[in-house]
Length: 163
Image (cartoon, rainbow, N blue to C red; front, side):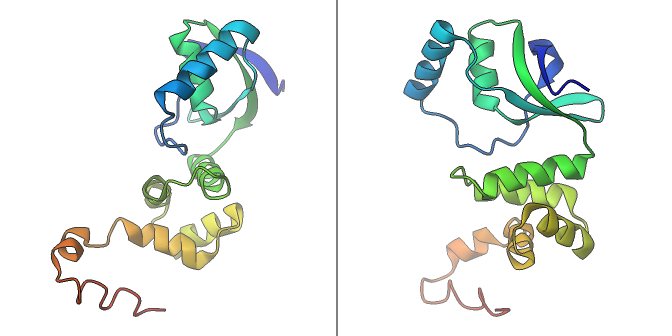
């Protein structure tokens, strides 16, 4: 299988969870200007998930190419991946780079984990400790509304009891 290949933009799907906080407008302009002058400077990392070429890394480049109305993009293709492998890789990218977005990591963990074995799998694949993966799982189930309404002196009570 060819790993680096030219792919039609219409055949690539951006990831639904962006590991990088949306780029500032001026950064988007810089990326657009650079690509206009020099061409695509970084391959988009993709994998085939359920028959769809989904972006693992490179949403900003993809979006820039779309704005510039390019028809093709250079991709590094990791081949066929199961959905949980795909999301585990995205979690790994998010957790181990300077692009941390806790809520989106938590959403991806919740998407592909229904039991402790799934959490252990994510831990093994990403290198994130099992305790931290479990914290991501629990993050979306925490009652943030009640936390926000609690008096300041009671807001932290019980938050760290299990540790």
